[in-house]
Image 1: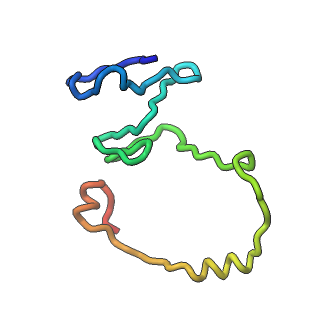
Image 2: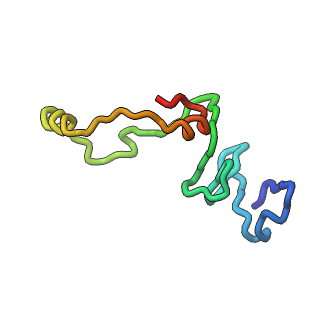
Image 3: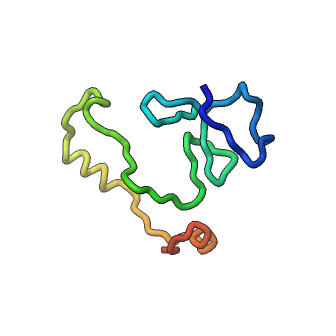
Length: 106
């Protein structure tokens, strides 16, 4: 079931049979089954934002025991040994990248 579809250039959409926007299961929600790109026409993930994003709330990624199995204690000394083998680096962003992304170069 389509909820809305509006564009300044209607030709940018394929035919109506390919509409992927649907009313969500929860009240006042919509769902899109595909990839969404903001400032890009080639998203390679479920959501790709090219530019800054402001979040008025939290970005949630649930991680609790309900989503896991085979939870067990690990050998702390072995894990510390593995951490000491990690390669740690410092770097500066290239100035042209930093200016486009609006970040400091260090």
